[in-house]
Image (cartoon, rainbow, N blue to C red; front, side, top):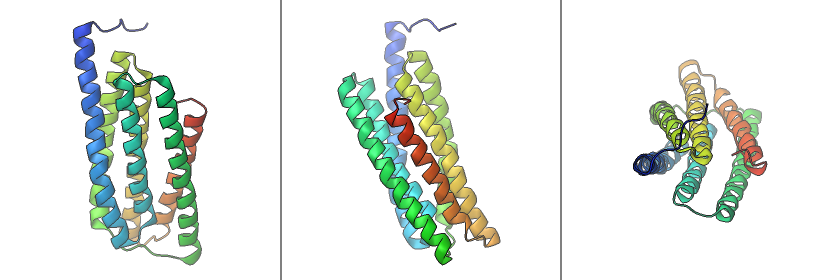
Length: 201
């Protein structure tokens, strides 16, 4: 049974919460781009570089939701989603090339304590934000916010995947875990492109 539509006072409160969740996501990902860029360069890690690029793309996804919550028209939202799809294609191509090169050449990324710490905290933060977006989107009856909450949850899973690769590399010397985490990101990017282009977001 569908929940009744929120009354105006509740609607205003829920919209404020939706905006707050998106701005928190934006702020975290902006900081993440800087942190991950530094960690990826220092460790020469394909997975960290890919996750940093993913954070950059997620900034665009949050901006799309902020536009939608502000009452932006459907045409502009569709155009923005297409641009995000193009960015995900670029991410997938970059990671496919870099991960394949790393595996073929036997490239060994250095240990990255900073990368491990950031991805661990990011997994927790993104999971909490995803939960908040799912509840708020459902209460508002807003499928865009709910769908972006799903993307945020996937972001938490990706952070956990990258974290696993970094820990295996550092603890067990499994150098190939880093490019394999890059392939996980490739799969995610292709999945997102399919969803964006077929209207499933």
